[in-house]
Image (cartoon, rainbow, N blue to C red; front, side, top):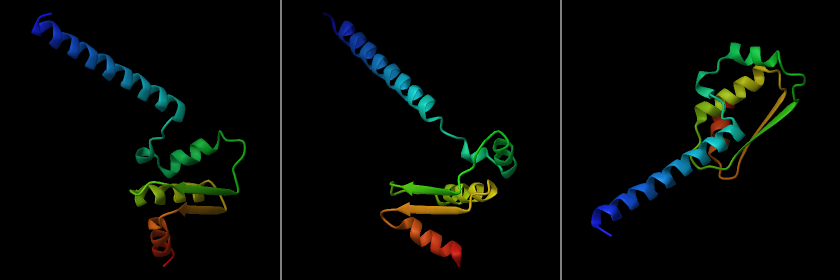
Length: 106
């Protein structure tokens, strides 16, 4: 084998791995259906509520990551309030949300 053939083989293998990873990622996104939180507004939440048969009384938000976007947490809480959810529980086992929630209550 020549050096050129080896390089082409490596490039081919890398492209196959890359495309496989993209396919796996797209399948995971299709399963999870990640919402576009940054574009959602109170009006869009209300429009989506019109298509929902039942609304829960209590929503629990569990965070297991260290890096939490408090802006996104606040959006989730506001959207839950707009939806008419009476109880919202925020839990994280390391504590950054606890200090955030205490700041919000003040």
